[in-house]
Amino acid sequence: MRLVSLLPSATEIVYALGLGDDLVGVTFECDEPPAARTAKTVVVGGRDTRDLTPAEIDDYVRTQMAAGGDLYTLHADALAGLAPDLILTQDLCRVCALPSGHVDDALSHLGCRADVLSLDPYSLADVLATFVEVGAAAGVPDRGHELVSGLEERLAAVAAGVAGRPRPRVAIVEWVDPPFTGGHWVPDLITAAGGEAVAARAGKRSVQVSWAELAAPKPEVVLVTPCGYHLDGAVRQAEAVLPHFPDAQVWAIDGDGLVVRPGPRLIDGVEAIAAILHPGAVPSARPGTVQRVR
Image (tube, rainbow, N blue to C red):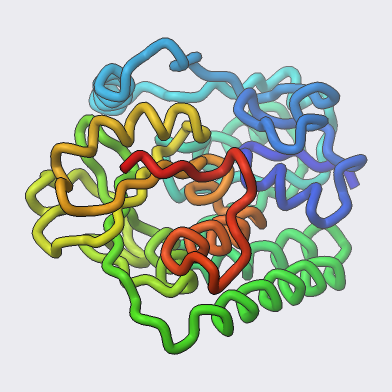
């Protein structure tokens, strides 16, 4: 089966299922594993925002959305040339990836008959369920169930390690200028790690909030997990958060690697957050994934 992934998390799922050799197309943002970037055809492009500040990125996104513009470009000819059997996409967030409707329209125009599977999880349980969905759609249902079983064992180990311990109040900052709180599955990661997510939106879209709203529950720990950034970018943004939470620990986390992409590495995120909240109760986070800023 020839697979095309139109979002980074789906690319990670495909590789976790042992289907990397069947993946023929990816997006310009697919950077994990490295082979996805170097050995696959890029079928979705977009603006390089690495030189923009968070405020400039937010302004660009809002301007494009208000004008009805697209943040991503589907390279339709490249897609057609790959002759895919299954395309993995999403409708969860127009800021994060190309919506499935764009893909359906392109396939209709091109006369392609690929199946399109939209992955739209809102909770951690939903995320795990998508691994089974992809496995089934790709013809390897047993692999999907095996992957989820292994990840659930790791979640159970974290739960056992933090059982009976006080749950620190944790605020999540997914963006700093303007501030956005954590939504979708992110609060579930905090709960699974032995914390209490405050000023968050479990199972709902992340939204812009004020710093006062984030600080009102008096969080003991603040996790800065910016979408689109790894640890170095998260550290820079976490430094801007410090004045708003003078009495809290502030940690930067590799957002793309551990928190915001709904793929298998979310369980790495649970383990890393548990190590922050309950040091000594669980193994330490892997180097290069988290950093205390204060």
